[in-house]
Length: 74
Image (cartoon, rainbow, N blue to C red; front, side, top):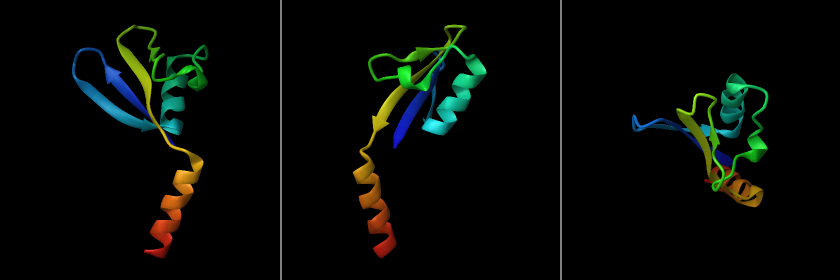
């Protein structure tokens, strides 16, 4: 599981996005942006330079499976 933070300039507005939502956001910015280039150390900045998208959380697949199993048996 991966979570991305979308920030809007200096407004203080931030929202967490799933990988799918972040990919859709990048598609609106243009085809030159690739979600795989977005890392904690290398955020993607919008064409206007106003917004930025950064990877803020990445869980191991095994962790997701363990959580799903715990929910199933709870």
